[in-house]
Length: 181
Image 1: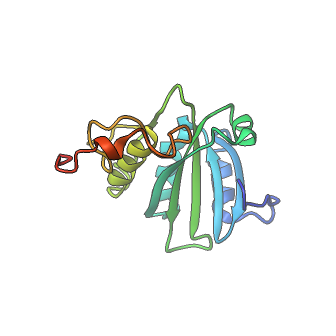
Image 2: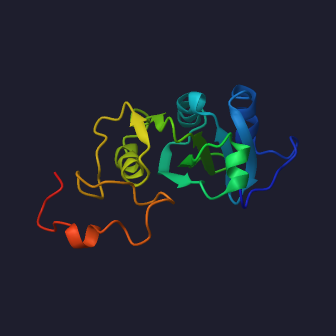
């Protein structure tokens, strides 16, 4: 967690204390960041933690859902049991002292599935579809998990680190007349 700094328990923001009290076994790491906190959570507890943040701690605004490919970052891979991807949720609250929270979830390449949060935030629909399209991470329970930025017959996931920088000849073979429906 790059720009984060570790804080002692006495100095911790209230949201971090509450998360550690309720999800102590689920938290893999936590830190204070600019204008908020960041936590890393195991995949098994992500939905429950996000539901708690929304319903009990008033993090009602889902700012973003994205992912990071850590395949070239040896320290991150080692720290999280060689999970190649990190799904990242950015949440915001209009109440309380800590307005922003970043929730990260390590996802292994062999099991690219994570629960969908479209039941909690309707806006997660397109954000999860974009993450699926660009990284190949499947959101279980999503109402319409399909490509959103690339054609349906597109092969690969362009934001993965192993995707060629020049593409795989898409520009030459891309059918600009075809609609992605």
